[in-house]
Amino acid sequence: MVSLDSPITIIRPEIIEFGVGTAERLGKWASDKGYARILVISDAFNATRVDTLGLKGEVTVFADVTPEPDTANLDKVLAAANAADAQLVVGFGGGSAMDLAKLAAVLAGSSQTLRDVVGPNKVHGPRRVALAQVPTTAGTGSEAGIRALVTDPETMAKLAVESIHMLADIAVIDPALTFTVPARTTAATGVDAMAHCVEAFTNRKAHPMIDLYAIEGTRLVGKYLARAVKDGADAEARAGLALASLYGGFCLGPVNTAGGHALAYPLGTRWHIAHGAANALIFPHVLAFNTPSVPEKTRAVMDALGRKTSGDVQSVFDAAYSFCADLGIEMKLSALGVPDSDLDAMADDAFAIRRLLDNNPRDLARADIRSIYEAAY
Ligand SMILES: NC(=O)c1ccc[n+]([C@@H]2O[C@H](COP(=O)([O-])OP(=O)(O)OC[C@H]3O[C@@H](n4cnc5c(N)ncnc54)[C@H](O)[C@@H]3O)[C@@H](O)[C@H]2O)c1
Ligand SMILES: [Fe+2]
Image 1 (tube, rainbow, N blue to C red):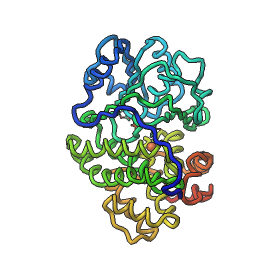
Image 2: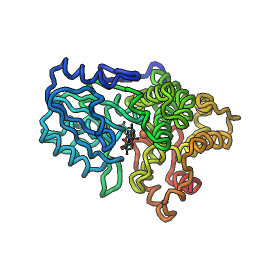
Image 3: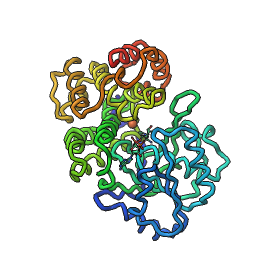
C-alpha cells in the first residue's frame, strides 16, 4: 500500500456542474464559448431528448451508440464526427456514449487511429475540439476521467485508451437524467460505481487522497442504491448515486480498479453481460478472496455498505453476496447463459489483464481465477 507521502496526480474536468435540473446549463456554457457546430454522441434512448441540454446552433446527433461498444461502433462514430466537423463534441448517455465521445474528440480529423492510441499517453495533442460529458446512468464515472474502453471483436478484449487529451472541459451531472433508468440497469450500474470505489480503496496503489472518495462513494451506494432500484423517481437517492458514480470516476484516474474488474471483463466481452451486472456477480468472490490481505479495509467497506460482518472470509462473502442479490441481480454465471466449457478461456482472458490484476492486493493466480468462475457458476 502506498502512504500519505507517496506522489499522486489528480486530474479533473475544469468545470463540474452537479444537481437536479442542471442539464440545460450545458447549452448556456456552449453559447458563451461560441460553439456553433456541435456533435452529440448518444444512444437510441438518450438521442430522443437532446433538447434537455439546451444546445443552440447546428446540432448533429449520432444516435447509434451500442452498449459495450466495439470497434465497428467506434468507426461509425468517427465517420459521423468527420462529417460533422464540430467545434464541440458532447457525450450524452452512459459510459458507452461518453467513452466513444472521448475517442471521437481526439481521433476525428487526426492521422492517428484507435490502434495507434491504445494504452497510456499515446494520443498526440493538443485536442482540436472541445469536449463535454453528460452522464445518464450512475455507474461508470467516465465523465470525470481520461479513459475510454472499446471491445476488439477479434480478441474479445477491451482496448483501453488513456490520455489527458480525453479529459472533458465540462461535465454536467444531472441526476434527473437517470430517473428513467430501468431498475435492473440501476442496480447493475450502481454496483459498477461501488466496485470502482471498493477496488480503488483495497488496491495496491490505494492512496489516502483517493480513499476519501472511495469510502464515501461506497457509503452512498450502500445508502441509496436499494432505494433507487425500488423507486426510480426518488430524487435524493438518484442524486446520491450520481455522486457515488462521480466519486468512482475520481478513483479510476489515479488508482484504478483491480481483480474485480479484471474478472468481470470476460463476461462482458465474451458473453455480452452488462458491465455492472458482471461486476456484481464477481464482487463478493474477489472481496472475500482479498480479505486476508486487506482485513481492515474490507471491514470498512462492509460497514459503509451497511452490512456488518464478523470479518472472516465466509461472512464477508455472504454479506457482499446478499447485498447484490437483494438488489435483484442474478448472481450465477450458469443462469446468464455462459457455458461451463468457456470457463477456461475466460480465466485465460482475465489472467492476461495485467494492468488491473497487478493492482490487486492479493495475487490472483490463473488457478484462483478459474476457481472463482467455478464457484460463481
Ligand atoms: N471510461 C471509464 O472510465 C469507464 C468506467 C467504467 C465502465 N466503462 C465502460 O462503460 C460502458 C458501460 O456504460 P454504462 O454501464 O453506463 O451503460 P451503457 O452506456 O452501455 O448504457 C446501458 C443501457 O442503458 C441505456 N440508458 C442509458 N441511460 C439511460 C437512461 N437515462 N434511461 C434509460 N435508459 C438509459 C442505454 O441506451 C443502454 O441500452 C462499458 O463499455 C464499460 O466498459 C468506462
Ligand atoms: Fe466499471
